[in-house]
Image 1 (cartoon, rainbow, N blue to C red):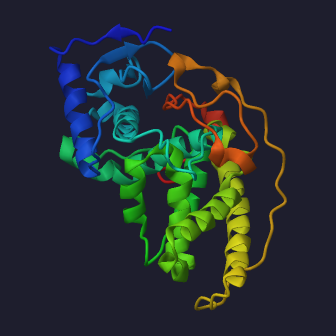
Image 2 (cartoon, rainbow, N blue to C red; image 1 turned 180 degrees about the vertical axis):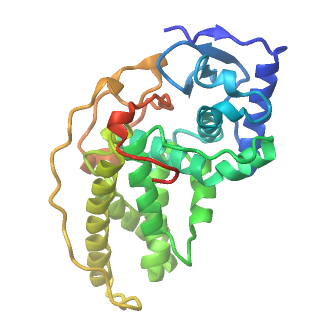
Length: 328
């Protein structure tokens, strides 16, 4: 499928995209950049996307590129904010490795697709104010996440997992570096650091095995579908994951005979998990930016090789979002 019309490097809009992309990357620097510099204006029903094989960046010719003017457009503040949020979102993907071939805790299924897109949206909201201030678009506010359910679930879990030993800002920095297939392992590390600190002194194999058990508690069946559902659904899924994680932490503390944390150990709650809803039209393979088409059982999700990319930042109809306002 065509990426769209190539944007000339001599054009103002190309230079503005480059400038914005560099500012976005400077906020949370990483060691790689997967964008090759090729920019396309697409007419597809999407905000943007980074091609996993060619490294080409496509941005909507209608929803994004016209609003990258170098200054605030008073009459189109909401649309301009969403356009800038798209650049920030795609810059997150561009600075992130995808695979980790030697890592046994890598999750190479569509679960990682849902979490990767959710994290890119969380990062966009977290850094948006600093981003627009540096870029000369100060005063704009990002409205609705384009991946509502994934954003809500990821935002909720980050708040639940982080703490004094491993803070939210540290997690954002670390997860921005990727690799994408290791996001669940990075989340599990936060659990160990903040809830099972005694295990951070154990040998590497033990720590890896503990994180693998925690990852199993996070592989909710709905992760692949979360980018296209409402914030309310994302929060429900996050609540079920929190219950499973709390139960697993309590089980691990008993297994390793650890002392209770201040305030009492987590409850031994379990979740009543519903079957996953079928994937919607987002199951297409637009420009090949998809994870595996087949999904192994979550219990074996850490043992399969990926065919990974970054999903496009598709527009979600307002009727499906169930949200309003920034940070919902």
